[in-house]
Image (tube, rainbow, N blue to C red; front, top):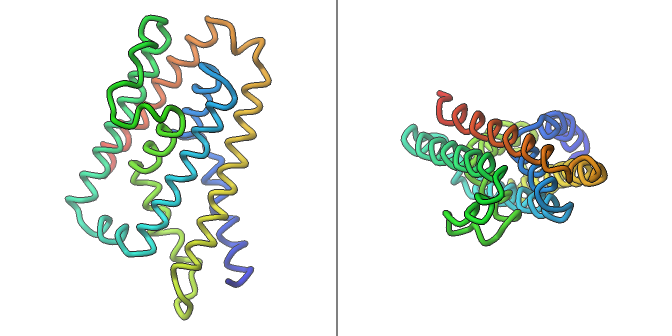
Length: 206
């Protein structure tokens, strides 16, 4: 794959990755509520979600979904509702009694941080859109498509992992502040509000 295509994709994907979003919020909340390793699990779950989107794009499934108004609507609503659910449970986790009940309502909840990162990314239609609208701009039509998508996906995942692991380490280093009960309550509520807002925005977008 030509270097100018790789560098062009890198220039486009880095700013998109650095913009705080769902997984940035989840990493922050999980590190503060648990440990640095919890944030790492969210990070790797998110990266695995990208691999699934890339696989769908490689076999044309993403194009099928995005070309169908009804299918796109279903994906958007499911993704938005999942974010709202995450936001509500994150808000409730600010209360000690609620923490014991949080994370038991979905079949993948036993996966913990990895599951949260994976499913929040997998159910995010914007992640699929990246591989439908952005990635094709850097593909050479005269060469096999799957290997090119694989290269760009690995690059995307590497940028994402480096950014989120760095952020998780920064948050974990401030334990003197982040371990304070009042700080955890504030972050849980702010993170919950952000996730709910992202979910409502996802559902409402046309």
